Length: 279
Image (cartoon, rainbow, N blue to C red; front, side, top):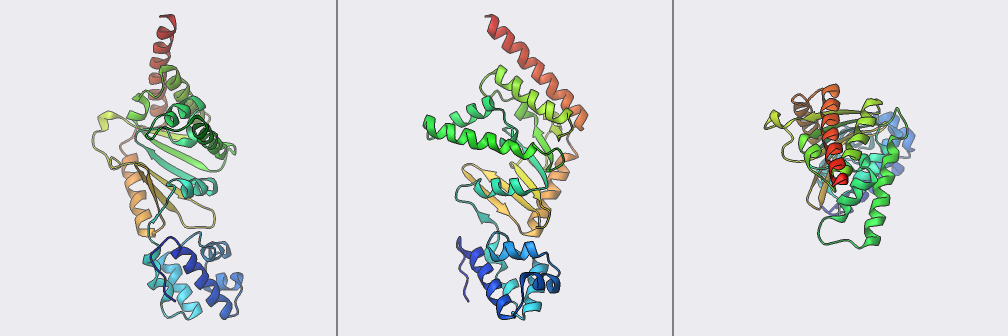
């Protein structure tokens, strides 16, 4: 079976796993026990939703006597590029039990207030129609529901100080947005760290990264650029992203000090908004 390096590679890989498993007369549960993998993970691989890591592939090769097929074709699955660049990441965000994210320029979507999100979605090129903007706004606000459960997902957000200082919309919009982050941080729903300008060069200067862990599946990293995004599932790459995040976290303010800075900046915005209202 040949697997081309195209968007269907993961599906074809899964189809081949299912074919060989059924040919061996094994159920997903039986294969999971012999290959020391969860049945859920095997089901996701067969459905084309996830990839095995190298150790998983080696065990699948051994149990199914596949002659090294599952290890050999792993490289065709590496670093899937998402056409609608956040679609897959958004789905994974809903499934995650732990999320750790670095935000360098904007508040992450699932933490945005309606007014802040409105301003972000009203910008950009080409311009969006009112209908398209409102549809995207509804989708973005819906993402905030992942925080409805106090215990899961665990959320850590590492902000560049630039996120606090960049005025999106108006001082009033920023005051409300920072107040929302403070409320979530003070209630212990999220853990907040700020990389202050004085930290200078740091490990995540190259751009935003989101790390996600799951109950039954391997962790992933999502990195994003202009109108593009990439999901990394390759264990070595995910570990590198984790190391980069941890290194930058070491240069950040503590949770308490970060909330104090956010509060101070929010008070400055509140003062500006009051002055603008009086004038």
